[in-house]
Image (cartoon, rainbow, N blue to C red; front, side, top):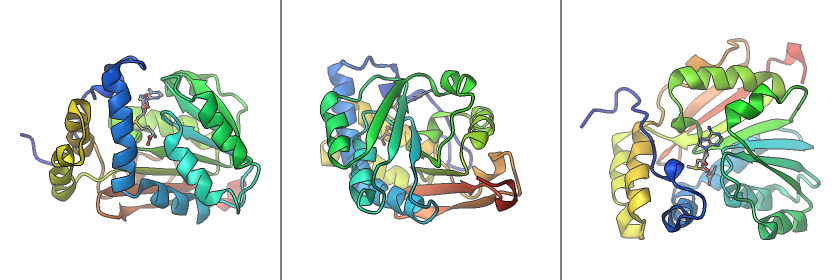
Length: 236
Ligand SMILES: C[S@@+](CC[C@H](N)C(=O)[O-])C[C@H]1O[C@@H](n2cnc3c(N)ncnc32)[C@H](O)[C@@H]1O
């Protein structure tokens, strides 16, 4: 068993399952519970609310089925009405019911089913007030993250991410998820996510512009957050 000093990025089982596979459906249900146990929606709400003025356009990359961002939207919608939200994920998972739930909050949703790198290569003039990632960046090796950040930076003045913290405590907790009813896929993917997670200033080191305001730290018990705000002199 390798230690936690360095990231270990391994394939996650969920990423290899087709969307309708019962194992994938169960794993996405587990993910809702994992996000709740990690307080990810509260953490993401704060990351956004503390850095972004009432925005018009938000992009979430690796958005999954949209359940995560719906919880964030419920916390923000009174302060931030009428947001245009783009949910991007390789899998096509956003149901009409979920769209309607965003609609009830006054948020309009566009779901994009694409690989994030493919989409960024054709994103062209797309602009967002903020881009968010939740439990997503850890899927990628450092070189790919550097490529991702370079492509994202021109699209937005604010990028925020809430990822697994690579700590012994988080690893132990991830191995106990069976007790919370997690299925086989999650019992594999959760510890793998922790080993691929982050600590210290690892994400800051990959961000392409040192003059941007970078914040990176632990949040809650299991989470590592990163926020990059574009240098004011460059404008929004
Ligand atoms: C752990 S899930 C997190 C989903 C969501 N953010 C949440 O918290 O519920 C990671 C998501 O990233 C997506 N994903 C992985 N690699 C991707 C890629 N290269 N491009 C787009 N989406 C990707 C997967 O399909 C999956 O839905």
